[in-house]
Figure 1 (cartoon, rainbow, N blue to C red):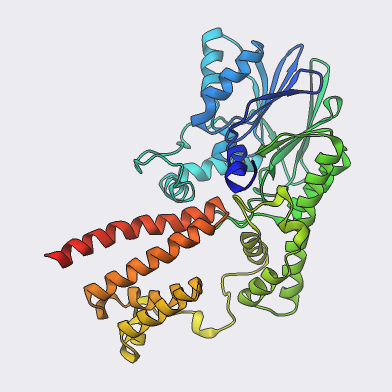
Figure 2: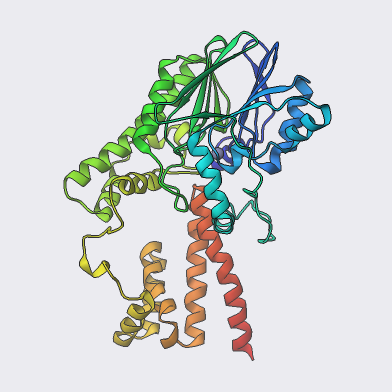
Length: 431
Ligand SMILES: [Zn+2]
């Protein structure tokens, strides 16, 4: 079986752990994946999963080996790569072992500090982004940034590299920007293995995430090219399927790098042609090559091409997106809608939205419905209710057709919000 749903199963790490190379290397799948390397002097662990997966990952490691962890590397400081360390620390305390070295980039420490400063805000955006898998009780934080594990070895600067030897095995770490500015990837020549962190996923790169800060398409492409040079045989991605075989590894890295170059270069070209976001976006939707569209490594199940266009534009451009001075200091959208409702009544707009909907022109229908919804003060309860129901219906259809987990969650969140509003209004109208 394949397709987006099956893809998500792998993406969330729901497959058995895999032992490879000389039998001393393992991938422990989770949200995200952990790379485990056994040496005669102890273990090297590349990434720990999100806190909720920590015990499962820990137990799987302990089913394979009882050696102490000597090095723990954070590919970056996201919640799903650097916070599932609890069971390891507990074990260290119980057994009286020495703490392992924790390796991270200096920007990882800045990230942890930022998370502490913005804890409530991040809880909120993560509850939106992960709504379909988040705890129903919205007061339960997915992970608290209060309990972070500070790196003991810091990789400093943009060109940072770090190598260490454990039990005669050489581990090489490199910093490159991509999904984040604190990324580290690992190359183990003796094992012919690369651990990429989120620089590679079984999905279109998560670049241009609508909720998250700037990400780096060109650096990302270049990082993948550096990985290609290693000619690895095994690749542990940050999320999704373990990749085995020199050709498969090369293909996964190459196609992802190519896609990042494509998005980057095409946006840059259009910026140089003096185009604004709307034109760039719609033109780029027309030219996305089939070889990317059809490639399993680039399926838009989490991040997607549409988001990537935003990422590149935002990297080089400020927030003035349209070139239309009307939009520089715009009026409130509710006030604009109220004025439009003085020209034509809500029923006419709604009828027009219905006709667009019936022609499957969902997006334009949404824009017209919003005039009715945003002009709430000018609209009777029953018309407002009809508009809400129509919008909800359209969004449900869009959510069903939406391959991106993040985009689908954004749409579903609105549907859930409308559900409550619709019920309240229905009860009010019955009375
Ligand atoms: Zn991740």
